[in-house]
Image (tube, rainbow, N blue to C red; front, side, top):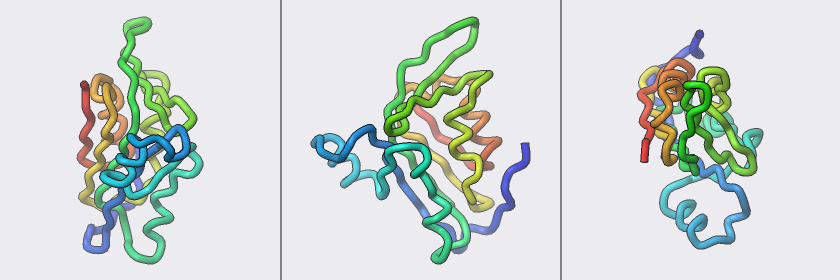
Length: 144
């Protein structure tokens, strides 16, 4: 799978997103936004990190996504993981790549980092590999 053309990170930016299921009316959600995430997204279609980089930079050198993941389950010898992206559930396994597909067309710098802060997503043998292939970035996921 081809990755987008890369540029050096001299004008790259760092972004953080929080895919939130609801309005930021709960204390925990407000805390996450205030302390950790620069942007909030409620549905996959409003996640547009490239638009943050149109005038001020050439690429994204660091992207952090903070969301809820679900404990993996095994069906037909396949490890499935799911994440809440706002109002939607996204699944990743050998046949379904909804999570990694969300990050396919981001204009990352040639040297970049992607960190997905969500429980259990590191349990998938497929997700990290797909994210690395789709982004060309160093990827950090968490299992617990």
